[in-house]
Length: 62
Image (tube, rainbow, N blue to C red; front, side, top):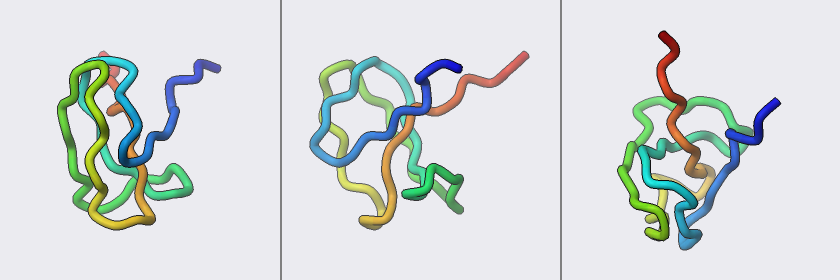
């Protein structure tokens, strides 16, 4: 299994350019998650609340 579902917190730097999405602290989906587009090296902003983390948005499967 790939280590794609890494979780990030505010102030950490994005490892890759791409779209990141809020998840719950257990790694589950949340309602109306905030989505952000970051470039590699950008810092993650604050989440909607402190129980959330950032995760790389999964690429859609074709």
